[in-house]
Every structure is written in C-alpha cells, then in structure tokens.
Image 1 (cartoon, rainbow, N blue to C red):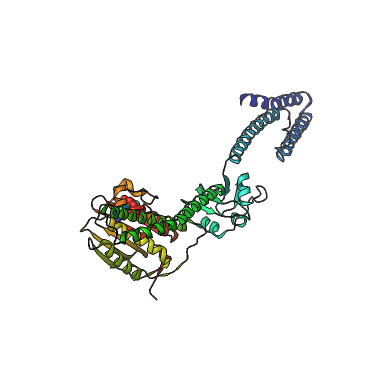
Image 2: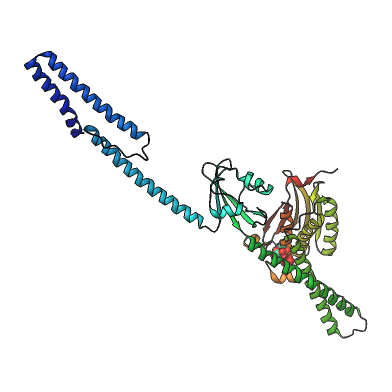
Length: 433
Ligand code: ADP
C-alpha cells in the first residue's frame, strides 16, 4: 500500500513543483498552461489503461491480461496472478470431475441424475444402454419421455422407494431391469438401474425345475398311494407287521403328496407371468366353510370360534385366498395343544379389511418370527413333521398376500399363543351389493 502511494504521489508533486518554479521564473500563465497540459496528458494515459482493462474484461477467458504501464502495471500483474490461480483451480476441478465421471462410468450399474421435475441432468453409459438414452442429446429431457412404461411412471410418483421396481422390456428386446430411486438434496433423485436378465433366467430355470419335478412326482405318488390304500384295506392281510408297515408307507406318501402339492402351488404363485385372476370373493361364506373344515380337522380337541365383525367382500382370487386362509387355520390347530382356543376373525381396521387367526397355542419366540415365511423354515422340525407340516404353508400365505398387495402381520408370545393377520388394502374392499 505504501509503495503504491509513494509511486502515485511522485508525479503530482513533481508537476506542482515544476509549475511553481515556472510561475516564479516566467509568470502565472506559462505555469498554469504547463500544469494543465501535463494533467491532460496524464488523464489520457489513465483513460487508455482503463480502456485496456475494459477490453480485457469483455472476454477474460481467452484474452491475455494487458501488461499496463505506470501504476496500472502492478494492478494488471495482480489480475494476471489471480487469473493463473483461477485457471489452475478450474483445471483441478475439471480433472476431479472427469475422474468422478470415469469412476461412475465404470460402475456396474446405470446411474441417472434427475432434477426435482424428473428431468435428466446426467447419465452414465450403462444408463444410456438401459433406457436408450443419449447422454448429450437427452440432457434436460423428462425421463418419462424416454421410459414410458406405466409401472415406471407410477414408481416415479411414489414417495416410498424402499423396494426396487422390476421393469421388464424397458425397450424392445431390452434387458430386465431392477430400478431403485434414491432421493437426495434439493428434491433431486438418483435413478440406479441394474440388469437382472441373467438372474431372472436362472430364477426361471429354478422355478421351472421345481415345478417340473413336482409335476413328474405327482402321478407316481398318486399310484403308489392308491396301491398302499388298497393293500391296507385287504381283509386277507393278517400279518400285523405288514399292516403297520403299509400304514406308515401310506402316511409318508401322503406327506409327499402334500409337499408336492404345496411346491406346485408356490411355483404357480411365484410365476411372474401368472397374473392374478381377480373376482368377487365372498369372504364371510368362505370363512364359514373354513370354520367347518377347521372343526373337523381339530376333531373336537379345540374350541373354535368364528367372529364376523364385517360383512364386506374382497376383490381377489378365491382359490388363492382359500389356500392362504386355510393354511393359517390349519397351523393354529396344529400348533395349539388340546383344549386350546382358536378364533377366526373378519374385521375392518381403519378401512382395511383384515383376516386374522388367533390361537392360545405354543407361540413363537421373537427371533423366529422374521424367518417364518422362508421356505422350509420351522421352529420345531419334529412337531411340524408329526402334524403333517410341509414347511411351505406360511411361504404360500406370504405370496398370496403379496399378490393382493396385502401385508402378513405376526404377533406371538411363546407359551401364550399367536395372532396371524392378513391386512388388505382398502381398494380391495367390496361392500355388499
Ligand atoms: P409347517 O408346515 O411346518 O407348519 P409353515 O410354513 O406353515 O410350515 O410354518 C412355519 C413354522 O412356523 C412352523 O413350522 C411352526 O414352527 C411355526 N408356526 C406357524 N404357525 C404357528 C402357530 N399358529 N403357532 C405356533 N407356531 C407356528
């Protein structure tokens, strides 16, 4: 600062001194003239430097900073230093951004950045492939112009992105995608897509294999069971041991038949191509029938009660719902000791139709509850077998519930009993005609 003022004041003082000397030697007029002319020259010099600055400011990115003269030399030198620093920082940022883009491009998943109104801000090459985008041309486009499937559009408008969406054939001959939306700052969203075509193929192979094996086993099992039953009923069979062996064979083949039947049911429910065939399901009538069946299954060992607190019907698949409700009733009977109470209840909770089975049976320890709907998961293997369980009942219930957009809720206390409830969405409720 001191250096600046020293340089800045040298000229006016020198001019003033010379003008005063001239005044003393040659009089006032030459002195004023001399002072005025030099002041004008100085003014023109500064205007010229300002013009240089103004010219440079018009395009500072491409034009070099002028050299400047006099006091302006220091100013321009500082500007030059600032520009060099700024360019260096810009280059560093660009390199970091490129690095980040390269890393995102190498991701095994497609990534699209969407703004608050679902316009594309950026996408990586894999996302270009998945959605048929052009990473330059389509920037700023609404994503729903590029991926128009109704389920995708609906997923975008949802506020719950906890579950990924499986999108089949996003393009003709396109891959099957698993899509997940991750909202982040300022209402922006990260759209992450994964190609699950090969995973789906393996899943289909697994499903087909289980379905085919079950189907192939069904006929021989029926034949064997038929013969065993005939042999058991033969009056000429006198040997006790043979009769016992045949009875055991009969029990085991029946168990296998149930297992094969449950596997086939699960395969059908699991098949994505098997869309839900919906109709009016008269739930009160269905529950009356299940109550009767439950009573005969219990054989008088339990006290069964049917509580129809609602008389509404459901929009759904009668066969599937019968199988799910029936599994819950049969479980309650099988896992409740003699003398226990079982209540079948049909009610509405906050507009949601709900079917529940409450029992005063064995109950389930909390650590088992999250795993009960896994295939072949059993709390007590021997009890499940003894009572003819296949280990697939609750898996079937969960699949049926999912297909009806319903929720399976389990509340249980060991030694006290359990409540298994299926909560249906209000849109499935059908009031009586
Ligand atoms: P399973 O054919 O073995 O009954 P499920 O899938 O129907 O198979 O049930 C899984 C397991 O959950 C059962 O093995 C049993 O341990 C437990 N379970 C199901 N329902 C009840 C219930 N009402 N009370 C106690 N435990 C139950």
